[in-house]
Amino acid sequence: MSALLLVLVALGFVSIVIEDLVHIDKAKTTLFFGSLVWVLYFMVPPAHMASGELMHALNENLLDIATLWLFLMAAMTFVAYLSSKGLIDGLVNRMLPRRMTERTLMMITGLFAFVFSSMADNVTCTLVCITVLLSLKMPTEKLLRYVVLVVFSINAGGAALITGDVTTLMIFLADKVAIPDLLMLILPDVTAVLVLSWLLSRSMKEELQFEKQNYVFNRGDLIVGALFLLTILGTIGGNIAFDIPPVLSFLFGLSLMFMVVQFINRDEPILDYVRRIEFDTLLFFLGVLLLVGMLKELGVLSYFPRLYEYLPPMAANYVVGLLSALFDNVPLTAALLKSGIDMELSEWLTLTYAVGVGGSLLAIGSAAGVVAMSKIPELTFVAYLRYSGYLLVAYSVGFAGVVLVSVLL
Image 1 (cartoon, rainbow, N blue to C red):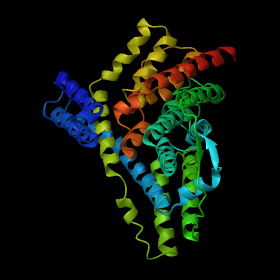
Image 2 (image 1 turned 30 degrees about the vertical axis):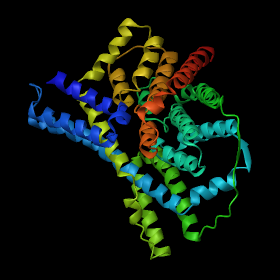
Image 3 (image 1 turned 180 degrees about the vertical axis):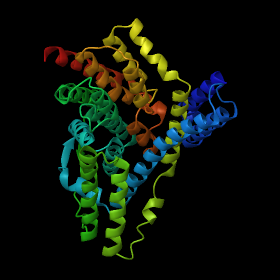
Image 4 (image 1 turned 180 degrees about the horizontal axis):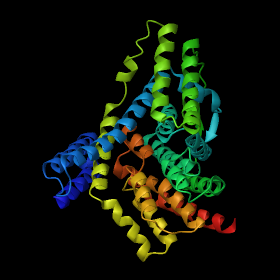
């Protein structure tokens, strides 16, 4: 049965890859395979597991999924409201100059995503960045290059701060690195983003012209925009000061938005914006996380610590980063920490970088990539894979930079 479940999980991931060939939405196929493997797991459980243990395993996975679902719902409702009111388009229109080269825009996009992701969560950052890019109405081929850079930059931006990436926080809480040590990752991470920006923009030599329009915003829209920003800041501050889960802070911010709009404009059908959420995005997340959860239950991730028996720690860390594009980096990091691997500070820093940034190599390797795929239909698994060479170069440059900086400092 374990072999059959592994095959079905593999087919679930393959269905994402061949979406263009079979013309079946990846949300449908991943949900089918994700729910199927869990049904079979309950029908023919491992010999050592009782019914209560099976329910505990399922509930643990469903809790992770529900937390992400609710967070996505809250963030996407905020963005849907602000987009429909033209607030995001208006801010971009005012901030951008009338003319700018494509290369300059590429670099600014990468740096903005990098900085924003160090303050906000990856999902919110991805939604905002993609909304901004869509407002520029670029050709699809060029849009995909910017989105690929956004996914990489968002993952790189969070790796150096405990508030930016869960895996970084896990390694910090395990007393493997300190905050001053993590700050050394900023320079290599920024270098990797700039390298990818240069690689993606080499063939882009045109000058962009932006039409300046006069957007008029009413008081209510500006208040909601400020509330969205305060919700992001409050999420970070609440988590640091009181360990408030980010999903709880965002749900509270969403409820405040409902109340504010209710009192400012009673005729505004505010709850209709919940219905504008792309539920195929949420179903895709559900399917993928069910598949990943089954891999965890089957003990696949427990084999990764054995890499360190055959490879030097630095080489093993590099490979683990590549593998994090296929496997959820949170349970992967947990498996490595629990294994009792003994490494030096420089080696723990490279692992922190690898598991934080390595997921960018594939579209399904990070939350940012999955959100981007769901928001932009043209960004399929294969379309993203076309830039894998550039992504691998940027990932390798950043990894080498972490090695160099940690040795020098």
